[in-house]
Length: 196
Length: 323
Image 1 (cartoon, helix red, strand yellow):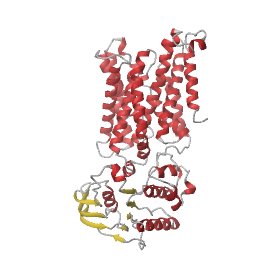
Image 2 (cartoon, one colour):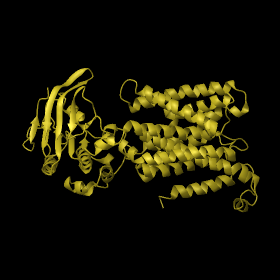
Image 3 (cartoon, each protein chain N blue to C red):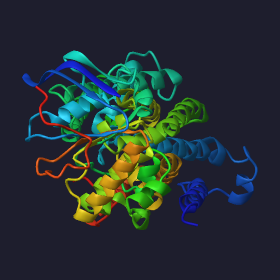
Image 4 (cartoon, helix red, strand yellow):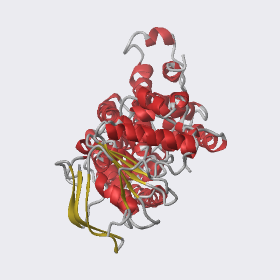
């Protein structure tokens, strides 16, 4: 369970999130939607421990992300950033294995045929799926994804959603920031539209 | 075969470099198999070629650490100001009569100078917020220029021959190396390489960007600090012993990536071998091409390293994507 307790986040002097509280239950998919610049990614980054709220607290079960070490946090949550860039020519398999076992997740996301391709040669959608695969391979109780469906075709989108649903049913807590074009959200257990 | 080719070439270059020189060594193979039997071979050339191996390995791994820690394809000790800082630290202490070139004291001063200038580059590059690759390189070039000028001024103000010339500090030379000089630089090189090997998996993750590396469990600031210290130890040891040699830190890791891929554990040893190979060949060229004169090794290293740079920007490759 993720507990957000009266947090306020100010970025560059602008109050992005104000006095916001929320509870995100374990074993569910929560989707955060809203227009560009409304603070969706900021909220996700705060849950991930990337940025500290100016006021209030966030806890993942008993852990405070902002207080935990990088190593401890990597065992609690994994995260897919928006537009993951790959600068070095690792193979798809090597990238996923930086986080954990690769075989099962590559099969689930139809990446097996790309296993030995260099990530620097992938399309945007393929690179995004590799980033998702890496985060899943990390095998943490909480999975955070920032616009994971943005560059996917209909088939890949369906694959990813099916996989996320299976993971939620296994008890994982999944939080997804959805692109503003994403309107069909029946696969979500909870949708957050306002966090002010 | 590909895996071992640079190592075989290094062994060949090492023996060839022992053989080549202004003075012909009679019964070379017999002398080579009997340590101490020939003064020129064992008192002059052997320490010199061994120093070339150690310094080449040190500068190559320093470049690898700079590129990995900055996640930047063109980072290397001379561009980040590390080499100029090492020269300045060493030349200041030598000019003051506190230490001599090639001693542990000079290496310590060079390492402190390297550490301070590299830290200065990082601090200045991050002064307006997040550390950008472009800002880091621009600031590094500026810091390097300032400290290179200071080295020139300091070396011009001292008339003692043992303080070495500006040519030595900016282009490097192995001409005055003795067996005694090898110990200090060997120690710093081993320390730096061991640290690089230990943090190599974290450098792999750092290539995915600071945020993703952090999500995968890397303490980014700590790893960058460790890399900075190791880079300064390597460059400090090498530069305070033989002066500054450019291109090795840039070219050797990139050549290794072309051959062996980007995983840093593989690259530590392979960059070291390739860096050693380039410096041994460059030193051999520098002392044989214009006999009886000797060229600064930095000139020969640039002639060998620059074409690699040109190849990197000319040929399409997927080893390092910059955009």
